[in-house]
Image 1 (tube, one colour):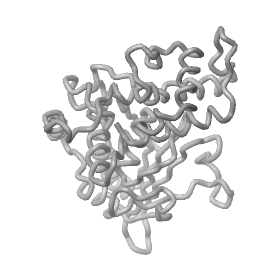
Image 2 (cartoon, rainbow, N blue to C red):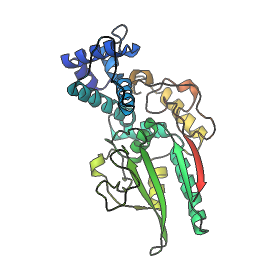
Image 3 (spheres, one colour):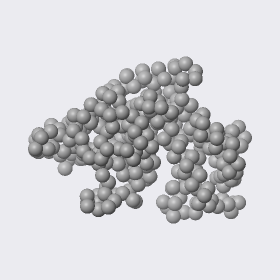
Image 4 (tube, one colour):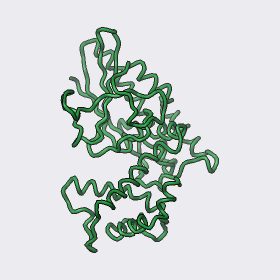
Amino acid sequence: SATEYDEWAKQPKMELLVEKLWKMTGFLKLSPLGNDNIKRLQCLTSVKQQIDIERAHKLPILHNSHDLCLDSREEKLIQKVTEFTFRYRYTGRSEEDQKELSRLATGLLPQAVVAKLDAATKDSRAGKGHFTLFSAHDNTLMALLAHMGFRDYPIPYFAAALCFELHWCDRTEEFFVRTRYSADPREQPLDLPEDRKQHVKSFKLPATSGIPWHLREEGDMLYSDFKRILMEERKSFISHEEWQLAAQAEEEAPEGTRQPAEDDLDDDVGDEVFNGDAVAGIATPKHRRRQASGSGHSDSVLSGTLPL
């Protein structure tokens, strides 16, 4: 486990918190029976998601028969552990960890995005435009942000969106991409005009992985550079076969070189992935217990395209 979990597990305030949450929720993953404090801490993601759901629907937070309530300090502790867990899944301990974990997690999604943009370059020359929506989970967004090269990206809230806009520049006669990320539409709606304070600014893909979010370079980038970095520099998969082989190699890696199992980092994992236009998730059902690096995730991504 990560050093952070080891340290948190020894802190009395964390031990009291997970015990209180066990009484409040009854989540089996928080039970002291069969789970040490490290595993219980890793499962706080489920608690945080439940809190967000109830708050969004204006419901009592973790209503329970013991009449226990969380104070602001306890909620901040939950958020701290949860945000670390979410990012650790896809960034690991090093730049090399991040490259491989996020690459496995995003699967064929980068290739699907580039394929849509490639097609748009042809349609735009003919005076046509399209809007493509990829419907995905928060884990898919985080994996893609990590794969793009960012380390401490903002954790997505409900209806978060990562947008890629393809534009043509008459002056240079080249296509360029405008990439924007709205982690929380309540604070940064994407439809605000550019002169508004909360307008979501575009940013460029960094040349290397492991870049802190606050150091991202703002602005648009040439589509040729965007495509090269996302597909070639990041070694994105271009086929199911290539993805499956990489997942198998990760599964067969020597003990001690692999990341923790998916179940250790908590999430719901299913068996079926490639339904309809699903392009991201676990490579094969047999690898369902791999790390939340992505060979262990079954979040599907479905897409649809509309003419503009």
